[in-house]
Every structure is written in C-alpha cells, then in structure tokens.
Image (cartoon, rainbow, N blue to C red):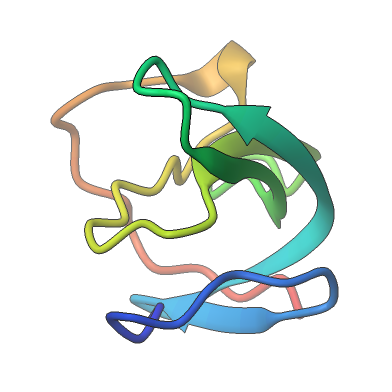
Length: 86
C-alpha cells in the first residue's frame, strides 16, 4: 500500500490485497492552481485474466483507489476472487 506523505517514484512496488502494482512512469503535471505535481503510471495484472494493464494516479495521493482488473474485465463494485499470478 502507498504510505501517506510519500511521493510515488518510478520502480516503486507495492501490494494491495495480494495484487502487485509497479510504478512504470512519472510525468510532470501543472494543477489548476498553478502548482507543479506529477502523474504516475501504474502497471498491474488483471485479477480475472492475468493480462497487464496500466492506469494513472497523482504522485502525491493520499487515497489510492486501485483498478484490479483490465478494461476488458472492468467490474466496478464486484469482489475480486483471490488468484495467484506471480
């Protein structure tokens, strides 16, 4: 899980409910208020089919709402049944 107050950097690995996530890119971003920030691209494997997929999140995030499935198998508010792909 992402630790509050820690910026996400390329290469950071973390797990959420047994699913592995890796930061593969960080891009600069200027917010509406003019402050500099960044957008991190996170890679994981789909909980249904095991295919790799990516999504983006702010580097200064304190809440981490993860995607657990690829766009093909997206199922909001549906439980993920635990499987092992590593």
